[in-house]
Length: 196
Image 1: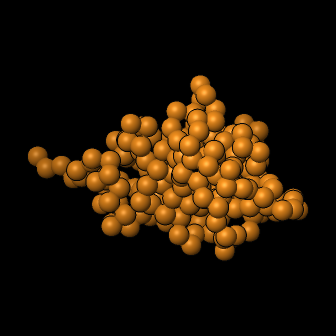
Image 2 (image 1 turned 120 degrees about the vertical axis):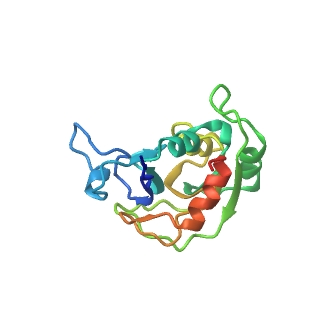
């Protein structure tokens, strides 16, 4: 008797603002089904309704479990447009303090960056002046963590875009676009996850 290995699917999706990271919604909000026709894949983790950027989907249960398991410490990198002018003191606090005791368990990496050449948001950010762009990398993914951290140092997040998960990058994808992971991306991430 011969068995054929079923090809697994691994997708990188650029989630737009105002889209739920699921395929159904009882309230009629925009969901993944409006962009991805394959209902056999599932999101690896989530991005909240107001956040944008990289969302990985797959039908590989082991891959999903390991990508979601905090023991693997996958770095997740975000661009955050925050209200006000962030100072070196704000950044030092983000990089050295557990700002949300009982919720945050690991220190993040944050830097101030130049305004990125990034796609516009479908609903523009209100005209706050001034604003600062931060790049923030964390290895735990708790609900609204980046928003809570920037608020804790006095710089509320106005726009949040995830640009990378581990070695997988959003690249130049636009909101609503999805693609299959390349063989090299998949090989690298499977090595990071300890999957043969």
